[in-house]
Image 1: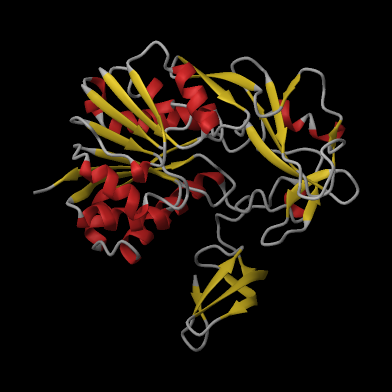
Image 2: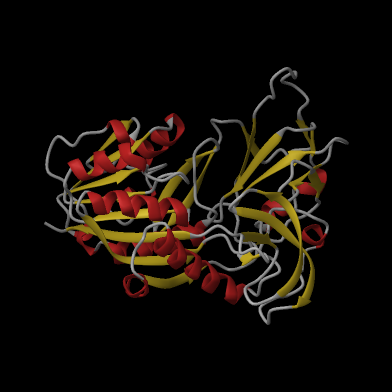
Length: 384
């Protein structure tokens, strides 16, 4: 973030704090503008040359590969602090006491799920940064080798998005894609090896915290096993009450990651998830437990008996008012909020504070090195 000679804020893509850069303005409004760094006059000591040829060629998948990996988590932690100060309107000294820098996954080969796009010539690639143009690729430095090694052999129809996932535990691979409107449903993807399981009903099994987690091709899972392990550990630190809870709630639960791991000591679990595929996986993963799986939006849920602790892991937009209202009506203590966007975290913290729930600790995790994405685990408790 910089300012032009008139004092207007300019958000600069590709620049690092403290650098002297030339900026090309891409869009401008009355109060702010957006631009891209086109020449680095005085580079930051944290700036490095991206090791990936595809990134240097414009691939937008790893927009932070020009930053030293150790500096990325520090930068993301500061972004979280800034969001809580500016959007959450928390005092600087309060924010400094709340936010802790946690762990990060390995900066390369950590992704066990990737999504590629068909190029006009039948190849595949990733979209260019801030553009719909597809940059052709034949490898990916952040993808597990089981996925990266598949890319050169695949042919994908133009515009088709192909999602590939692998299991670290078993080596299994799944593939799924959707038929674009107006296009025939056959011949969209070719070159897939025989060992790859295809379609929404395909699934694989991953092991997290010693627990088998079945994940269908159409269900959500974290960026990889390292990420899932870090999240489970952080949730456990945020809510040690989970080990002895009589009734815990796993909201926006996906395939039941937290219910199966961090909540393994809870007497009973209510799991809430809107995805049919994820609910199917959760029922399988938790069949041996006293777990009730509810397929619905969290905002429509109402607790029918006392709840000891809630873990909520909403999508990027956050809880919003419906989600916050549903959680606070259940009156648990505490609420653990897993957020994947600093802005939605700040908005949700503001909404929860208005309902009497205030943050006690925010742990920042880097589950997507080389990108701007940041994960946080926040413990909130009710104050009368």
